[in-house]
Image 1 (cartoon, helix red, strand yellow):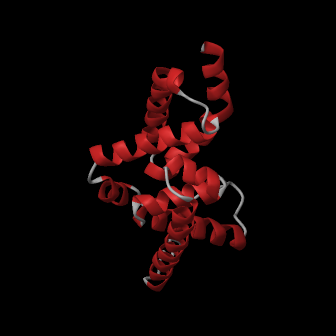
Image 2 (cartoon, rainbow, N blue to C red):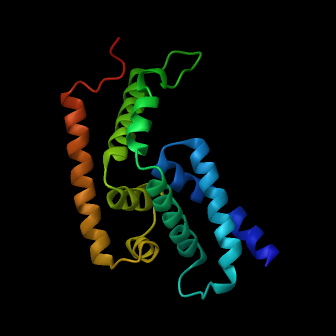
Image 3 (cartoon, rainbow, N blue to C red):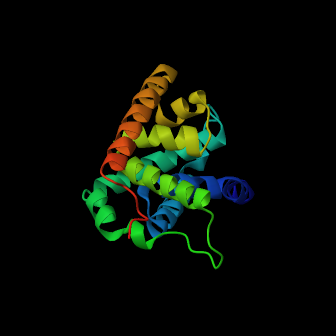
Length: 178
């Protein structure tokens, strides 16, 4: 069991961390949640039946840990929006950044800000499909949904994300304005 756990950890801990980071948008909280995931893995590995891949099983546990975390921290969205100042979090380099890279960084920041406004189900699908690059089938297994529900939710989530991004642009979501 110890070597199996070690292999699971080495193979997937970065993916699990990245998934949880995009879900909670906080480095320290994501690190804590990763630990929680692997504690649950240790406690429940003997019940793993192999009906899905280990990766799918692991992300399913991570999804539950993230949702439990949201329930514990009901005001998480407001706290994040209040404490994270996009104007102060820009990437700094000793050499000036080319305008294209600066613009791209701003768009990525805006996307993550908008992703944070999405419903949990939408965020789960978007992170699993586009950031973790999982298939529709894997995403369905992780979420315990049908493939058609994943496709429908993905479609709706993309529309909502696009709307949030357009609204942000209209409000002058330009973090470089000084």
